[in-house]
Each structure stands twice: as C-alpha cells, then as structure tokens.
Image (cartoon, rainbow, N blue to C red; front, top):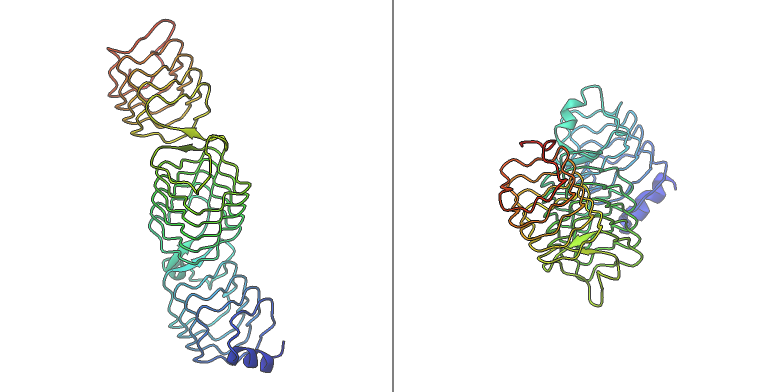
Length: 341
C-alpha cells in the first residue's frame, strides 16, 4: 500500500493497517488513537505530536522516526522498536510493553510509565481493558483485581497466576493456559474459554455465566456453591471438584491449591494429595484425612477438631497455631517433622 493509498483508507474510516511499510509517513499532529498498526514499519516518519492513545503498535518499527510530543497513553508497544526514535517530550502513561520492546538507552524512564508484561509480573489492579495480550507469558503473575474486560489473551500462559477478583468480562481467553491459576471471585461472564486449560484452577466464587467453555479442560478445578456457571453446564461431568462441608474428595489431587479459609468440615479427604496446599484458617473439623499427603502444606490456624489423621503425612507442614488436642491422631502419624511443632 502506498502512502497516498494509506491516507485514502484513513480518511475513509479504515483503522486497521497491519504488516505495511509506511516509512516516511507525514503524520504530524494526526489522530491515530485506537488504530491497529501491528507489524507495520513507520521508520523515518514525521509523527510529531501524533495521538497514539490505545493504539495497537505491537512489533511496529519506528527507526529514526520523529515521535516528539507524541501521545502514547495506553498504547500497546509489545515488541515495538523505538530505539532510535526521537521521543523528546513524548507522553507515556499506562503503556503495555514486554522484554522484546526496544527503548532508547534511557529506558528506565519508559519502564516507569507502564505495564511490563512478563512471567511473574506484578500487575495487581492494572487497567488492561481491551488490551491485546495474545500469546503473552504471564505465568505466576499477580493480576489480582486487574481490569481485563474485553481484552484478548488468546493462547496466553497464565499458569499459577493470581487472578482473584479480576474482571475478565467478555475477554477472549481461548486456548489460554490457566492451569493452577487462582480465579477466586473472578468475573468471567461471557468470556471465551473455548479450548482453555483450567485444570486445578481455583474457581470458587467465580462468575462464568454465558461463558464459552466448549472443549475447555476443567479437570480437578475447584468450585463451591457460589460459583456461577453457564446454563446447562455440569461441573461434575467436567471433572471439577466441589469444595464445601462434607465434600467427597477421595484421593483428589489438591496439591498447590489455595484453600485458605475453606469450609471442609466433615469432608472425606482419604488419600488426597494436599502437598503445598494453603489451608490457612480452613475448617477441617470432623474431616477424614487418613493417608492424606500434607507435606509442606500451610495449616496455620486450621481447625482440626475431631479430624481423623491416621497415617497422614505432615512432613514440613506449617502447623503453627493448630490445636491437635481434639484431633484423632492414631499412630503412626508423625508430627515431629512439621514446622512449628
């Protein structure tokens, strides 16, 4: 597409220009807000004071471009090359970038102005509405209470990510990997979770009304009576595990799961795997944990009144604040290797 053809399409209302060579474009003072320039080249262009608010600039090349006084508020700059651009007085606020984004040598200035998308990132409370985050690696990231309405995380990795209270209403989460993720209380209404991996995810209190769960893997994901599912969806048929008083969880794999404060009074957990599980303050009164594996589990302050602990493994478990006086400790349960004993 020639520069003249670009301006014709622009004036006609077209806002998507992907994989184009638009070098030497004269876009001084132009409004490019909320447009898409994915993988395009804007090298040697005059873009002084141009408006790129909420613009998709992923993998765009800006070599030797004049971007002085340009507005990049909430722009997506993942993979963009601005290393040789003139960014004097450019405005950066809440930009989205990653390890492949190339900034000038004083990149610390730009880093402080946005959201760094990477594994383990702290993005708690971040406003990422409508963000294009397809294929992102956000494994173990902290996204608690993040605003992700109508964002796209197609094929993204969010394994063991913290998404409690996050709002993912209407988001494209198809083929994303949420294995072991904490989605407690998350809003997933009308989200596309087709072909998503949700095994062992925590969906307690999550809202999934009108969500697309076709071909999603929900095996061993946990839920409770407050979880809201789409009409005609059966969590039992999907292999999910109900958490609540009297729950039947024989030999269930609940390792590395957050069950802090859970009410599991009278639950049957015979032979279950609770290794590294967070049971802080959980009510396990009258539960049967015989032959269960609680190695390195956090039992701080848990209630164990009349809890059956025959042959239960508690190696390196945190038992601080736990009263075992009324627990049923038939031998050979050994507390000597538990932390805090």
